[in-house]
Length: 117
Image (cartoon, rainbow, N blue to C red; front, side):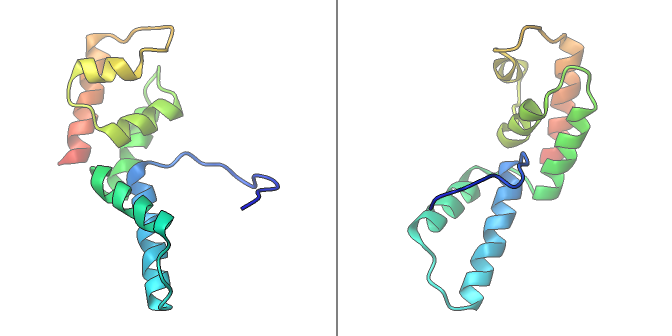
């Protein structure tokens, strides 16, 4: 497939992608179309690694973006990985030029806990 231009671009969490892939799968199955290899593999990957619902994942990203030192890419990565410890969170910030305080890390972990439950 040749792409001539990108019309729009949006960061999505893996949970949101899973929801979209399920919609595509249901649509194709309803039309009695066969699911392609790539689509089946993408659905399998999303099912295996998505850890919450699309709504909770988007809520978590929105809450994280309200924090001071949060970039959209990192917020989406946190929603995908759902880190459970401070060290896991620190690895997501390893390339950044600043470090987070323990209070910041704890507040992020609290938000992640709410999204998982």
